[in-house]
Length: 204
Image (tube, rainbow, N blue to C red):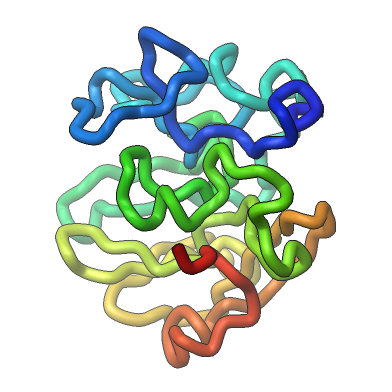
């Protein structure tokens, strides 16, 4: 429905607060934009989270009006307290959304150009393998240049590992062709980062 109303394009990864729907020019200050990577829909998140759009301003809110649709029951958040950072009990608590959008960055850098932000359906190659929406365990992230790994599924309780994952990295994935699957990313995220079972971006 969103694509039907937007010339067959996927949602933007970010937009100007003063001009919703406008592309973000290179060099724009972060306090002048909303970032939809962690908030395609859902509920209002924690106050003070930079670039977090209110629920009513998110691209999919009018199409999926029930906020809980964007909440994963296994969502265990991301814990930075081991590195003197914050702890959120869930991504839902922080962002009002458990899922991340494979939009790329918010400016005009490579990841913005090679991921789905504002792209047409025709732009996507191998749609059955191209990631549209995922959970944090699907990708390694960094905190102060140190890699960390989030484990929600098959982890009791959910946890954040630093250095290397202490268990499987499981994430449900929504692909660009509309099908979903639950995948184990442990091998490609930690041991074999170049041996990918999915596609995150297309070459420029």
